[in-house]
Length: 549
Image (tube, rainbow, N blue to C red; front, side):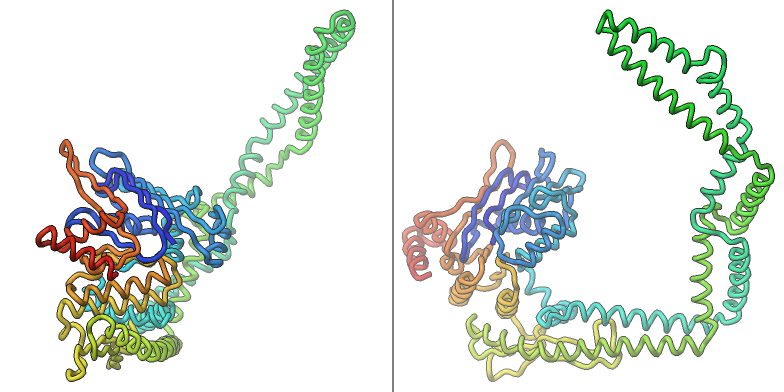
């Protein structure tokens, strides 16, 4: 569950800190006070996209952090595998966004990627936005809703990929028929290019080794002369360094008997003598290994010229010839398929079968999930002042299957037993649509494994007795999970176990937002404000709502 949320310099919030508890918590405040900014902060902390406009005017960066408690063994294992573990059963997410829109993410103090922040969020919190009911009018959203309930998102992606692969091969087949002669000529040309490169025997990393060998052979004489000259200076010529070092060391050794201060100098000279001796031995070995082989040099130069010629022909650098060979071989494989109509037809048929098999599995999962979700949402509607209402998910077979599967998903609703089921987009009023959306979200929330559920003004378009029913439903949900809800309805707010008020103020031309936890007296005042009307009547009604909640 979400224990604490801290916000600094976010939009119009200078600083805000919330310490949250279990159960059902409501966030209230006047329109435009910034209630949803708190939800936006949570969304950013679990991987939502950021931009520079989120930084408060006059500030350098947004700083957000949230502390969660958790019991999930899977999440603990993920943290450990990702080297992001902290205190057992606790995790701290942090994100900073600068004025250029760049952000830095941290999990338990460890630097993390945005993808890791998002993945962590999937274990911790489920956010239901204020426009969720509007998205239900889109066909794609209706399909995604059913697939999520069926836990078939991966299968839906597999079906879409199989469809695109099938259509891609169909396109290749059509192109092959149009360009058979041109492709055959290209194939012949590529075969010759591949033959030449294979005959040349290009190998990965060869260019670097050949160039290094050429440099060594080409400078063999100067390398040998330099080594021999150095040997003479160090050890073999009259007055060489090494004998002189030995003589000086011997002299100081005798003198150090009389003055111990010379011993440190003596140690340095003896160390220098030892290292110089090692250098002499290494130089002698090196001089014996220097290769003065003109024939090997000619062979290396010939190889370099051959590689240069091939590189010019293929318009690449010499070191890129192995990659060029691999590229040509891939293209040849495509052309061999394209210029072999029968093989291509078999590939298209196999791709279609893969798509149809995936689509059949997806259809079966959808059919089963449609029945269970329809029953669950219908039952939830009865608790949201839609007694006798009915919800159904219709799967309509498509004449031409697509990336989304073999059927169209249509949400249908009837608000009264005497009315037939009709598409949601055509029959639901704003209030009905909000209630159906809320019913769906509550079912989805119960199925979610996360401990914290956030609802952002999902009660828009609803009022009166329906609002009180929704408040009680959210309170019941709060007995199983931590529920946070941004609301403008006093009937919903009165059902909260905890209430925070979000207020906006202005001073010296700067706007700021403040969040405060309310005690009973403050809750009555806030509920009275939300109810409106005369102060005394509103306060009395607010107290009644709070007592009934």
